Each structure stands twice: as C-alpha cells, then as structure tokens.
Image 1 (cartoon, rainbow, N blue to C red):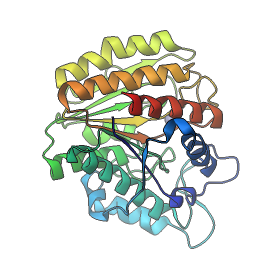
Image 2 (image 1 turned 90 degrees about the vertical axis):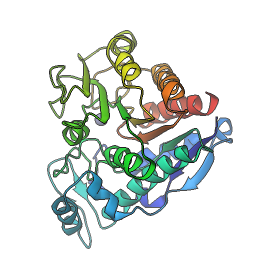
Image 3 (image 1 turned 180 degrees about the horizontal axis):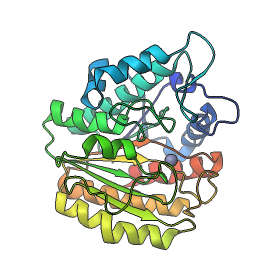
Image 4 (image 1 turned 60 degrees about the vertical axis):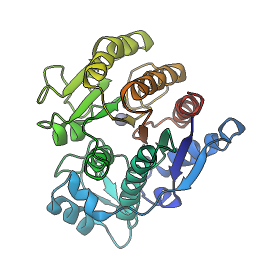
Length: 308
Ligand SMILES: [Zn+2]
C-alpha cells in the first residue's frame, strides 16, 4: 500500500482555552508516534492551502462569513460553550479542508492507495450553518462533495467511528442518497442525535452503543449494520471520520475500545475500499482526547493503512 500523511504546523495554532480537551498537544502526540521507525514508509506531505470555494460544497456563504467574522485579532473567543476560535483558527480550518481535498485528489490519481490527514479543528459536528462541538467546517462532507464534483465519484461512503455522533455530516447529507453516512457512537452522549430511527433518505445508518460497550458490541455493530450497508452501497470512495475517543482511556465517553479494535475496523474499511473503490480510502482525524489512547490508536490505524 502507498499511504500518505498530511499535516501542517498551522494546525497547532488553532487555540482553545486552558483545560479544553481539543488542544494542540493532541496533534503533537500523533506526530511523535508517527515519527517512529514503523512509519518510515509514510509519504509525508505538508497540507496544502484550502480553496475557500469548496467550503460552499457543504455550507452556505453566510456560515463561512460568520466564522470569518468571529475570528479575533488576539485572544480566544467562544462561539458556544465548547467551540472556540483564535486568530489562526480560520487558516487552520481551511488548511484542514485543503488537506482532505488533496487526499481525495491523491487516491483518485491512482498512485496513492490511502491517506491519513492529521489536522485540527475536527469537522463532523459542523452542520450546514452551525459550528459546534469543537468543529467549524465539516471537512469530511466537503471532501465527499469534492470527490463527486472534481472526480466524478457517484457514491461516497463516510464511516464515522468517533464516539460522538456526527450530527453535522448527517445534517448535510440527510436527503442526499449519493452519500452513505454510517456512524457508531455512544448514546446517550453529546450531541444527542444518532438514533437508529434517523435514516434520512435511507442513506443514514446509525449504530448507537450504550455506555460501557466494548470491543464485542462495537464489532457486532459493524458486522450487523455498517458492513452490510457498505456492501450494498458499493462506494467508489471511502472516507473515515476517524475519531479515537471510543478508546477506553478517553475522558469524554465511556466506550471501552482498544487499539486492536481500530486496527480491525481499519481493515474492514480497506476491504470495502478494495471491493468497489480501487482501494481509495481517505481518513480524517476527528476526536480523541487522551493523549496516550489517541496516539496508540492512530498508530494502530495508520499501521494498518500502510500494511494493507
Ligand atoms: Zn468525538
């Protein structure tokens, strides 16, 4: 497998208040572990600047404008109790989108099999016109539409194993059967959406897990709900909203996964991409707030992407 890794120093400059779980140290921990020898085969790239026009693939102009206007000249400003912006946040968020779109270009070029984008802020809570849950723009949703508009992808699957439901991604594709959105997440938990009964145009598959669920129930949710939906849908691109906050060490939730579960789930996504998508798989970092749980999980995930 040829695996590419995108990151950029600007992602460390999106600042949140002291004690906030979504902090620059997360990416430092990810960078540190991916610097180790087992990852020497990764093709490391600087995330390119994003094209602002692509934000409109998932958001109305007024949302983009509202985020731009909220950026302070100095200090940190809260958009809500969870979601904060600092002077470089817009630049960071745009570059996260740029990296995700470049990753789509890469896998459609045929030279790269799969890509991991280590960026922040995350994206899956950002709805069409609402920033929330640490997220400003919905990077995964923009990348899915980018694949459709620029590369003629007909069916894009977004699989979201972040422990929180990706309400934003669900909102954006609610009535769009060209995108399949599958999510495993803890319920009840923030943001409160993600019941099994939320099915959109038949293209939304929610597999909620009760608190304290572990490996068995997570894998069972994949086997009984996510994988059959993917098989039927036969995507020509697989995007992973890769949050690692379902790890047992994570402070924001009570699901008890280990690195081995992320390795396994990654393998399942690669099998799916091999079946219908010529291996094309793009993985975008979402949550994961315990630095050790996050870095070990990313190592398992990226290790699997490299190894095949
Ligand atoms: Zn999360």
